[in-house]
Image (cartoon, rainbow, N blue to C red; front, top):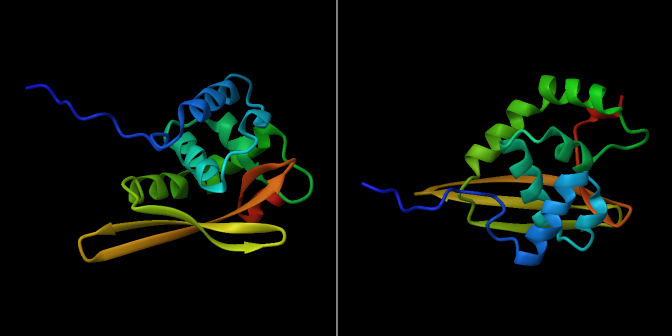
Length: 145
């Protein structure tokens, strides 16, 4: 018996051009390749990066107020405080029904992922802010120290 189902990916809805830009991004981890991506697509790339444990991509997509952490410090804090939470989001919202900007403010916005399992509906909100014209995922305050 052959399983003909395609493997799930959070990148499925990216256009061919966006997938090319994403590939360039992961070769250099330079966010300039993600310029013009919607906040929703940035969030999907961030979650995909958590699933495949691409810590360099997560670091590049992280918005941290003030001074950014050096990569090694970021990596330590990520695996101590955020990795499990990101994996739970990735699993819980794997077959999400919608992703949309829920609230816009002058300095950022909230993106909502929604999934329905039978009569149960779950949502999660993630804050994104622009940095150098690229949307980035705002991480908990633990990363600002």
